[in-house]
Image 1 (cartoon, rainbow, N blue to C red):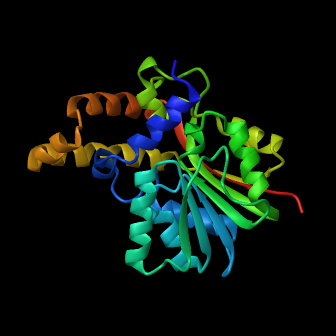
Image 2: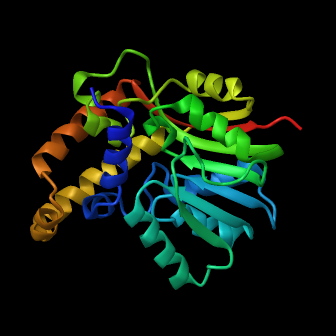
Length: 263
């Protein structure tokens, strides 16, 4: 069993690798930027709001929110190389006045109390070893009346096959995913009342299919890119098969939820 510190380090390192960008593309979560827009609408973002993007990855969400919703965004991510990439993309897009990135742990967010109108966390809460601590941090940095929007993998408790309980599966947002009711309970204990939920199981099914299609295409057309990125194609395809079966049987799903801090 890996320690929380080891899990965090592994997640940060994995999501900074070329292999992840190669297989996932620009958006590192099911539903892509389309679901990000849905989440923003559910949060009722307004021009001038200050938004926190937790586990921001390469910054696609932060840039979209700044441009499409006229908000300012602070993104945090544990991976130093990931943050550097995100900062570079922001500079290239001319958004440095509206978007900034910080190296930081979701369980110890390096930003002040009560300064954000909203927070987003996409497909990442499931990877945090201490979800209760992360939820408490969400509550701490939000203003009274502020909202947090989360999209994440859901799982039927006790139903995961052994192949989806490994450290690799944790990094892939599966091994420590929880039922939707458990996510809402965790937020409730942190003082955040869930005001909206909706299911997007089709998003995770579609993402798995897209990864498989991209992987098979690269194996045929550019195998050297997979080799350079250190992708074990056969191992990934075996993992995809198990994940697809888990989605088809209802073990794995994907959900969106919005919770509010009391005024």
